[in-house]
Amino acid sequence: MNNNVENLIQQAAIKREQEDYQAALNDYNQIIQLESDNESHYFHRGQIWMLIEDFPQAIKDFQQAIKLNPTGLSAYNFLGLTLELLEKTEEAIKAYTQAIEIKTVRAADKQILYGN
Image (spheres, rainbow, N blue to C red):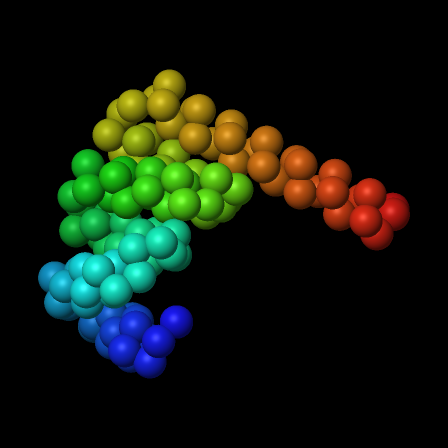
């Protein structure tokens, strides 16, 4: 991650805390232009879309985060929450179920690695 991206991430976090969501979105748009292969950037921008209740955009970002990291629990959880807010219950259940399956596999992997 280059310094410009790190600075933009810090700026976006401050703007989000100040509830200047449009400015935070603008920062994340720039961040994604510089690093389009980082799922974290899409995830954080998706959260901002949720805060301003642009749920279709949030869904797109969470789906992109999942595409880039298919084992990212948080993206599945937030996708499920967003779908739930749109009353898309069946789709929300699928997202939550995927998160549960990933968490179960991770727990099993830890048990194999570390024992009981």
